[in-house]
Image (cartoon, rainbow, N blue to C red):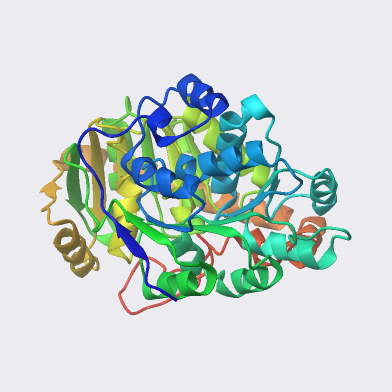
Length: 452
């Protein structure tokens, strides 16, 4: 197969959507959504996509890549509106919903119909949605495979477009075997778009297997943080992390903030501790039901809750317009995950802060992150007297949180356990969103499986 063509990024005088060749209904849609000019990835990818070429797009979260693949698909659908037209694969349920919403918004003028096929939702209602012949399916891989194998009359044989979004994360989450199954049942004569934040060896292998003579468009060649982001660290013993976090929440009470943890257990526990102490916190992680996850995200985006305590399920892809502060309760093992987390703030030219809690076991990780970003973090100032005053209250709130989580675990037994087992059978591994294999915070070298 010929190697991908390289397409350079033009920094000055970006073209207009009209000069790129979008049809009038799409020009009206982008204007209504407030898109003034194409972003870098859109300016580079759209001309080739509108010519019918396969695309490899290397671009970070927040670069406008959803519209870069949605607009040419909708324009092709306008010219040939026949049945199931495109399938988009996404790594998480929330991102799948977000992609579907953008398709429907951009395609509102021509009546684009989407179906979201993800784990954690009723398979019967999904089968009914598929029977209604949507134009676009946005899916997580495991649940899509379930329907391909079990839903009578459903297939992807007539598919014209196939999109892999956040391909590096799809492969990091071990969706490779599911994607291989899907590639075997879709037409060889199709247009394929592959978008990824990085070009890992796994992504390059997937590209060779799924694309034909693609154009490569790259607008972010290395990891970096934006200049408007102020990055801080806070050093404390491991046993003092919770009280330092509560002190930060108190100090920054007027700001919207996202707190990232490595495990589901910590996300749930910290949200209970914060609520017990009067802070408006809500958790977001892979063990919540889909309605709970969407509800938490909606409350945070609308301002109903100013603190979102989340695992890395919220670090990429989600469109959360305004976050003032990102706090890393646990340092991510991989530097690229740090970049994605802190990228939740200081977006679209706005200022923002990130504060990372560092214990005696995290020194190597923090140095690695500083080396990758090329920036030294500043020390966040703390008042030892304030910490001492808070400590007893935080320890009591922590004990209450542990007891509440034990009660919740007991109440979820019986029928709840049977329901979860049934969902796992029906939806495959998508019900876990591949949030399973993580390293528990603590001593380096000690690995423990936990659910983020």
